[in-house]
Amino acid sequence: MLAAIIAVSIAVNISSCKKNSVVTKTVDTTGTVTEADVAQFTADAVSPSSGGMADQLSSSTIIYATNALSCGVQKDSTIIKASAAGAVPAYDYTFSWTYMLNCSGLIQNNITFNYTGIGSYNGTRLSAIDTANAQIVLTGAQSSYLLTFDYTRTGIVTNKLVRQYTFTTTLNIQSADVTIDKTTHEITSGIATVAIVSTSTSGKKFNFGGKLTFLGNKKGSLVLNSGATYAIQWL
Figure (cartoon, rainbow, N blue to C red):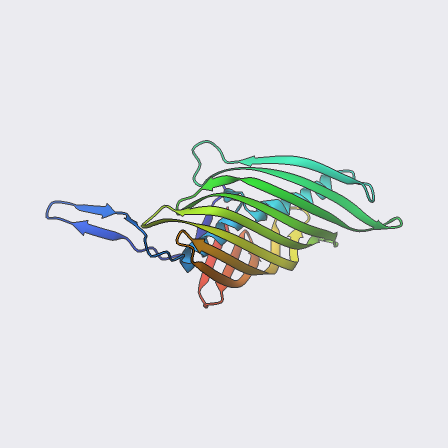
């Protein structure tokens, strides 16, 4: 089963007595959105096990490879993605796609995709009700596809662990050089810019940014502007 792993540090409040220890969960009242939580939301937005964009980028290449397309003719499709019963993370998303092959005369230039997705996921650290949309331009090379994309995911996110709180987040990821293998349809390389705007329930806004590097083998590295690095992996 697909899963995403992100290295983050989590503080746990523990109260103890002579006979046993009890782990308590504290509801956050500070109105602060943490860097670790937006990093986790970014990882979830990438991971296929949370309905993330890595799966959608791969889907664009599969659509291109398996459909008969005519120059200038727009097509559409609806794809439902959901986890198996009892899976963790659990997710359920409906994606609406449009796509068109662009040509100069009889010469194929590229194929453009647009999709919107709506649904929810429930992970080990975060859960969210969110929407996603992306614009993708795909061109072919001898052994790989080259993708340019602009991806946005907006949601109401809940931290389920020690700092129990809810915040809204808009995440944008853009890249002009992601490559996907033509045989496996897996991401092999690429660098993307990341911008995140989060708002706490108290109305405070928090801005984060950084760089996402796709390393191949279903791995990535997120480096935020603070210098903090988070490893992302999916199975």
